[in-house]
Amino acid sequence: MASERGQSPYLKSLLIMRLDAEQLKQHLQRGLKSLYAVYGDEPLLALEAADLIRAAARQAGFAEREIFTADAGFDWQRLALSSRSLSLFASKKLIDLRVPSGKLGNEGAQAIEEFCSAMGPELMGLVSLPKLDRQSLSSKWFGALASQGVVVSAKAVERAQLPQWIAGRLAAQGQSADADTLQFIADRVEGNLLAAYQEVQKLALLFAPGKLGFEQVKEAVLEVARYDVFKLSEAMLMADAVRIARILEGLRGEGVAPPLILWAVSEDIRALLKIVNGLEQGKALQQLLREVRVWGARQELMQRAAKRSRKSMLEDALLQAARLDRMIKGLATGNIWDEFLQLGLRFCSGPVGVKMH
Image 1 (tube, one colour):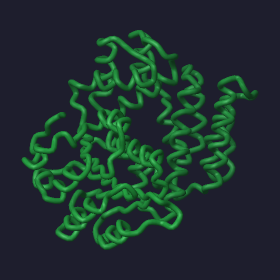
Image 2 (tube, one colour; image 1 turned 180 degrees about the vertical axis):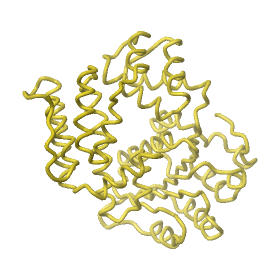
Image 3 (spheres, rainbow, N blue to C red; image 1 turned 90 degrees about the horizontal axis):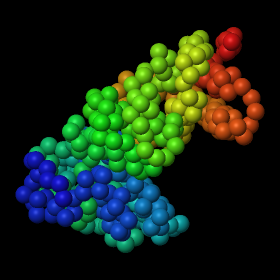
Image 4 (cartoon, rainbow, N blue to C red; image 1 turned 45 degrees about the horizontal axis):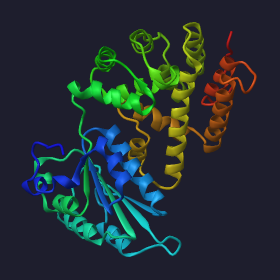
């Protein structure tokens, strides 16, 4: 097991219960525990780890899921009450607790300790936490999570380890590359794990399974189109009709692969729909943004687009994206670029008066 600087002596004695995020999938294949805590400063890995745990819980029959976000003013009695009650319609329940700040206070610390003790065959817990300081790692409540559950560390991937991480992600989608090519990708993304994740996804869309050549990867990764697909997504989120049309013309002129454009656009549509649905259910916007893997400057863009977008429009946009997918695969007829334009213009209100030439 990997060690961690600043880890409490108590946790060090329980290393067998601690996993790195990349080890989680193999662990879950061997069986599911009743309690997991995911913490760390790499949002992508933390979200992926939590998703894997939720999926394993569903497969194990935990049909009911109750979500709590313990922000300022959270009533910890709600957690205790949920731990003592099961639905009439489900025999197993997953309690999904998110603590965005990582700060519990005295009441929260005691509630977590009691929460850990309540887990069993019919009740499962998942606690999501950010990067924790030494004091938190040495706390009694974190020791309870470690002793009674499995602690999953979603720590940042070191720059030197990034080529190996990229190789693992390529292998998962049936692709491989030599050491120089892996190092090239790592250098290109400058150690940014989310950027590396996006590049690996791009390679899956552009190339068939098998070994990737350096020139293939260089052309796909290094050559940044003047009109790139992420700028198109940005224009759609901003409801900028003229810019949408201009970027699509540029993408077509530069020969950017339609599957790559569709992937980027569809990701945003699905994310927006999930946010809109979540807001209707009373969920917190910041938590929804984390769930759909939106960080930094894009959060404000996505927030504005979510407030402006109707659920029915987003559902229609997904149907149109599915039609585009069939057109790209030759299963439906039509002009792919005109269809992209019409899809983009769904995000713009009122008459726009633009068309592809």
